[in-house]
Image 1 (spheres, rainbow, N blue to C red):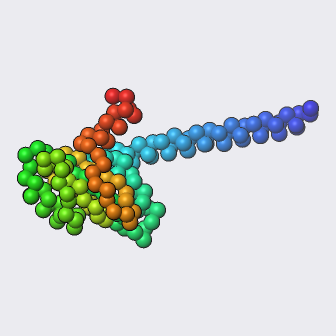
Image 2: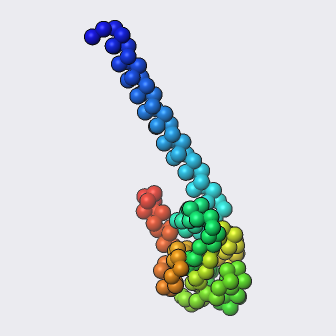
Image 3: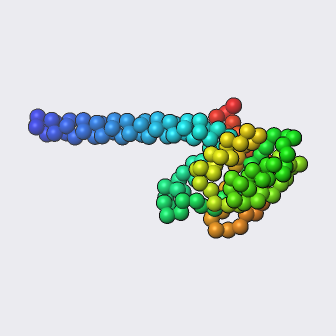
Length: 160
């Protein structure tokens, strides 16, 4: 094999190695950006299941013509919270009358959801957690979660 062939082969190998390095750098950048986004979700929506925030943001990006997709939203409150006060506050925030479960600490409503409504639910002082599921145009099938579900899942993933 001539010297020219060796040089060409070495250049191809060097280019392939450079492209692999760029691919690794891109993947590392993606990982870091995803971590930053997850940190923002947790900082802004600290009482909300991160999976719900991610799902809502993704749906809003994928279908900008539908700024408020339908969700069944579950709100868990502190014990001793006045159920009528909570119901009224959730109605005012979401436009939907919630069903009440678990001795007035678990509220379930089916309504259009956007980031503003989610933030208002997050910021209610007596709310402990907010979870939810996308339902599309279908009706709610009632409560699907228990208080602490998303934290249990997070703990399994992070091995805490």
